[in-house]
Structure formats: structure tokens, C-alpha cells
Image (cartoon, rainbow, N blue to C red; front, side):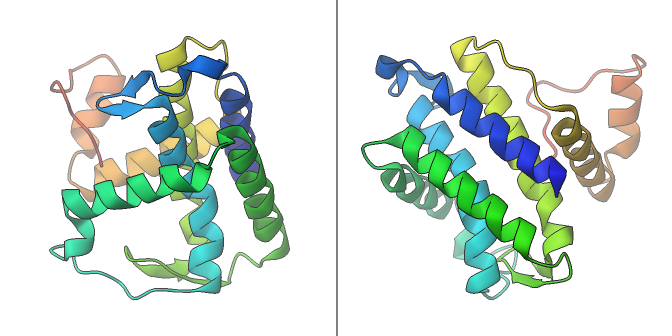
Length: 188
């Protein structure tokens, strides 16, 4: 839970440093700063959504996972930022952290990826918050470092993904200086 709070605070801090005229600047691929922040903020919003309103699991070939559907959810996240993106991120972060603090790690959570406990789901949200906040920090040249607890959980989550995809050996050898990863390599 503390890693989630750290990751949430990291996003809020970075969003607070976005210069007034920079929300429309490029940030990551085709995403603007505003779109990146909206996407990252989903790691706040989905905690409550999936706890309070569990959804059915979606098979890997479902329309839900299509690029068009993913883009539509991203656009909706940007709309939710409204006229005050920083205020929206602060409010969503505070609400999500309160929810996590007041909810047992054994509580059921129903997401399209799979049904699981809150404790099982949180590492993926820590990784989303941490990775996308680092994207924002780099895009804007902000002088923020990821909190160590959030970074540790994010690394474990990402390495777990590499293992589950059969990429564990390749990643291990690359981070130990005994190999390289192909351009564009991702565990997502």
C-alpha cells in the first residue's frame, strides 16, 4: 500500500510542475502531456471503479483490447481531467489513496484483465503510475526521481510480466550487461 501512495504522490507532484502552456505539448509517442496525465490518472480512477463496480473479465481477443477501444478509454480519461487537470489528478489521487487505506488487501476487485484481490491488483497500478510519471518527467525535463518503494514494486511487476511472457532470461541478461533488448522491446 505504501508503494501505491508513493506512486500516486509522484504523479501528483509531477502534474503540479507542468508549466501552464505545456499541457498540449508532445509527451509520449502521439500523446500530449494532457493525454499522458489522463492515462496515468486512470491508475487512480480504476481502483475505486473495479472495487465498487466489478466488471466481467474480457478474453484476449475481445473488442475491449482493440487499439480503437484503448484509444477511446484514453480520450475519456482526458475529458475527466476537465479544465483543471492538476485539480482532477489531486482529487482522484486523494480519493484512491483513501480507498486503498480503508480497504482490506483481500477485497475482491473485478477488472477486464482478471478478477483478483486488491493486494494482487495494486502492483500493476503502482507500475502504471510510476512508468507514466517517469514518461512525464522525461518529456518535460522535470527534476523528479521516482520514489524508491514505487520503483521497487514497479520493477517487480515488470519483471513478472517478462517472466510470464517467456522473456525473463533475455531481460535478466540485458540488465546485467550481457545482452541487449531489441528496439521497441516491451513487456506490455
